[in-house]
Picture 1 (spheres, rainbow, N blue to C red):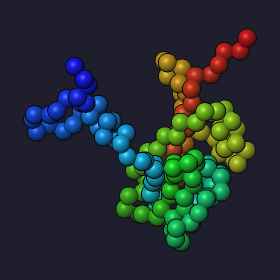
Picture 2 (spheres, rainbow, N blue to C red):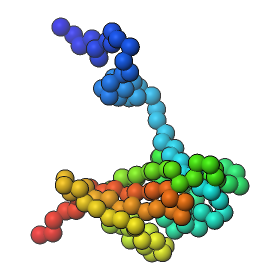
Picture 3 (cartoon, rainbow, N blue to C red):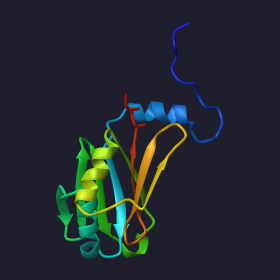
Picture 4 (cartoon, rainbow, N blue to C red):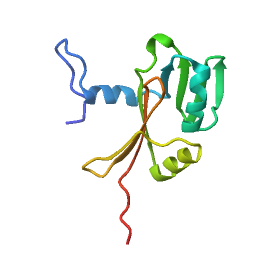
Length: 142
């Protein structure tokens, strides 16, 4: 019997992960993750140490870093929402990312390695937002 696609829902429940993934796969995505800060001008130097020079400034209180094609992070002044953002960026070379960030004068607040070997470095901005960098398990040296 030919594959008729995903099973059809017959109840009012929200779609499950498989159904959501099938729907998302049919559209073009651009990730645009935001971090809200109390004072953009005060926060900007910290984020430049973390991420380097911004790619562009949409207006006087927002900066955007394009990390890869169709993947960006922005920082925007929004005092009421400041300190409540969490973003994790998975990179292919975590050690190089940490070294580049350290060279700009910023060290992680926390580092951990999960049971599966995946590593994460967590930075917290002065408002309390969390920006993490994750990486695949380290390759054993021979």
